[in-house]
Image 1 (cartoon, rainbow, N blue to C red):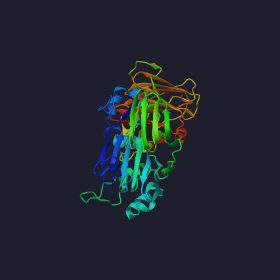
Image 2: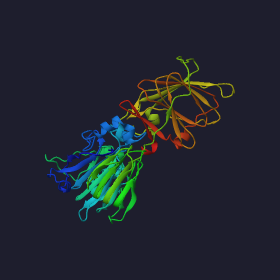
Image 3: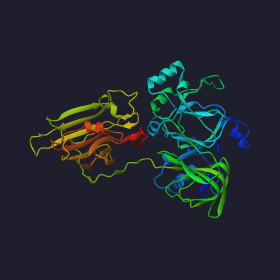
Image 4: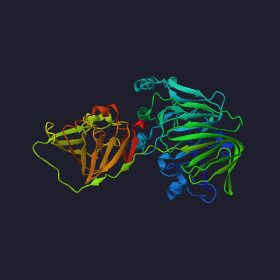
Length: 500
């Protein structure tokens, strides 16, 4: 069976209600959260029935990643399903995006969405703020006027709320909701109403990290979908990371196979059976299931509403081998060579996060013989050395440039260490070639290019170009490279610039 139900994993919380406990016939233990589908290290879902009973979803993914997740999908694209039972309002919080979370928490970024199952009369939630700057929100913290600047949205059963990463938000009192979100457990608590724990202490806040990642221009949105028992299919969430479709079914519906990726399915009204070939399982109210990518068509029978979550692939950059290699090890040194050193302070604005870094940190050095522009047959020769520096997780790189004379081409030769040569054309398309001792790279003058040290040692590259080429750095300032390269625990991650 490729439809996998899991045992709920309950978490006690200070804000817990008792709705979920009553609906599931459990004692009231102040369990505000129940992880239903998760492959996150914090909560590993265990299959509750069928031939894989007792196995974790994580072990099944490790055993058959393509069959479970789909070709090319990895842990960063996993989804998690959780129930939230708010007897009191949750803290006002914010989740980081992928890059910040990987650099600072060794976790993935978090975008989430909530389907409201039950809501007390007058229930509302926080989904954004009226603050427009860091200084403005810091002043509100000092004066204790945060609540006046929060945007509150009234909600009722059937509403679906979208909360992209970077949005200040908080589920409100008297709401039972299901959360569909990305594979993360990183939350920065920004404000908690001066609430105290069992020991009488105010709970820890994460002000600085919250201010690092909050997007003042961002608001949550609410999609109204009251249950009217009319058959329909409606897309209610369309994030870059995943989509969610609402299915109102009255009788029978065939959910077609989706070999491109896994899906999640959650029953938010009624009860259903799911038939795969000759096997049938129950999908009861408040239950979720993981549908593997290799699942066939599934026949759903019942009356009510289900939500189907489908992941989207994160942008990935193709990194190819260089077309040529050569064996060399010497570096030219003579009296006409000119040298220059770039420190962090010289190009700090090009990095995502320079906080806490020494501005005098040396990033790279360039040594070159610039040749004679007046002699058509002259050549310039240079050596670039990039230090193995990480700027809060981001790999050190050169400024990057186009050639002023775009007919002039250039040759790079890898000499020591390892790294990437990133290209960009005038349409903004980027790609990379690996650079290592012996690699040779032919660079067209119409391509912007930048070197990046991805190794743990000095990265040295030799360069040859005509003196008439010129260096156009301003063009790269106007249209930055579309990707950045980060390194976490030895793992290289290439992140789209637009997601920073």
